[in-house]
Length: 327
Image 1 (tube, rainbow, N blue to C red):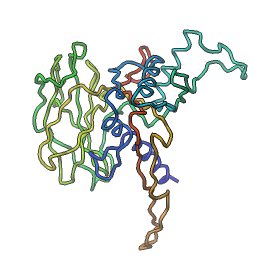
Image 2: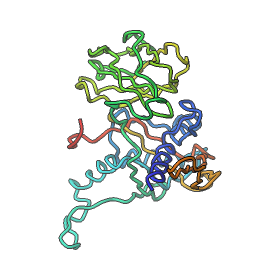
Image 3: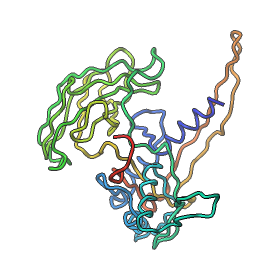
Image 4: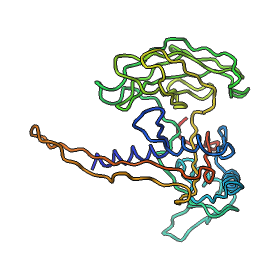
């Protein structure tokens, strides 16, 4: 049972965030399929804005407009983003103040009607806002990467690719983690235990070298919000290791924001997308070589996106102001 649930959790994350550029055994999830193949207008960067009816309506019309001719049917999002949207209905009194259900008050929304048709909300806990850097190494100690070293100190040169604006100028804490299919290393402070000051128009760049003999497939970069405290870093980037055991130069242009997540708007039918299952979930007994009972469990398949233009990806979706919870 535990093995089955582990496979299903891994598969669910992979459907959204799988990336064959990071690991050769991963398929490409819908985030990468849309980013690489959808028209530019179908990737909408909210730059930290919370979700709203207006944004969802415009996204649905983007999929419907020529030459896409799509119809959004499902919206997959982090439950906290849906909660922010739900809470916008309360002050407008767009809900039943009291429902005759054994004294239960409050309401929920399971979908909305756009000018392009009805859309169902599908909250999914595996659509995350990055998560924090691991405080301890994760995975098999003999196979996971060793702790990386900062080979070149963080610098902040001016860059034409920078998306750091005037409101983003300030101090940041950064952490980098080395990863492969077997696990993750402990995080390393990019600034050497100090904040990194970034001005408008700058990028942040640094060098990192793998630690130990175990191969590194990719790096995860974590960063705080501007002026945030150390320990509040959230994942903003995953970058493939393109240099093997040599030093790798990594960059942050502020294209991805911490404490933000993505929203997937799909035309969920076979005209637009599917999951090609090449082998069903199976349990295969292994040879008996001692007193333990050994087996392997597997499922083999890949998501397919036939018509990217019929779908929309919202990136850098933030939380509504005044929410209670993690900072």
